Length: 294
Image 1 (cartoon, one colour):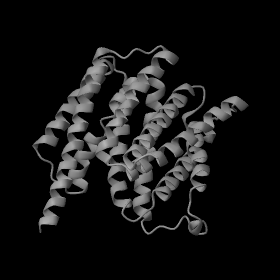
Image 2 (cartoon, one colour; image 1 turned 45 degrees about the vertical axis):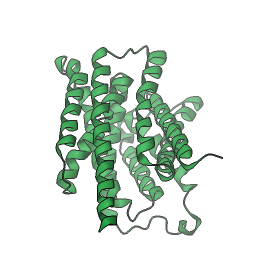
Image 3 (cartoon, rainbow, N blue to C red; image 1 turned 90 degrees about the vertical axis):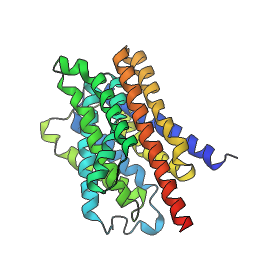
């Protein structure tokens, strides 16, 4: 019988594998329009979430007291997912994953303006280190005027705002409803791209493409379960295994070898996010201690 922390590790590891496989399929699907890939991500995500809706909510699963915040979360999420899908097709897998690790850096900045949080010298230092890492990774792209390096950064910006809205939504809304609304939003957006041309997939390709939605949906659930069973401080560092999988898949499937600059930049971004993460844990413990003492 596994302990709660062991279950948390297991769910986090499974979510990392699921998201990594989804990224691989998105990168592989270059013969299909982005809008069509969004359809598979959204529609099959919807099907998945309908299996986990509590029975007592089946008749009114769509009800929410915070439609405006859901809309903002979906808009930011749509911007992020379109950007990352484009980046995955145009850049090496390890490069995209390395830059995507910078999302907590932008979340820290957004939290100052949107949540009125106070950020100390350590987190500002971490933000600076993270931006240096991003510059090291993207420098070859900037020098060659490769505009596609901007898309992982757009993804980070969108994901950072999503993180802010999730903090607010999760206090009143169930995780499955937040994810379900997002899958519906993705599907609706995909329908708007039909006039720009979709490609009829073969049966085998249809099965592979449908896995984008399945992996995306189930990985989100596994991620939530990981945080439910284990301490966040224990399981979050496992996320950086995503870079290991990206390097392995990129090399064996597309013959991509990450450059030294990419690895150095990724190291700096990872260090910066770990600093931010550790400071947030310290801050929460400090607040909890004050509440107990008072």
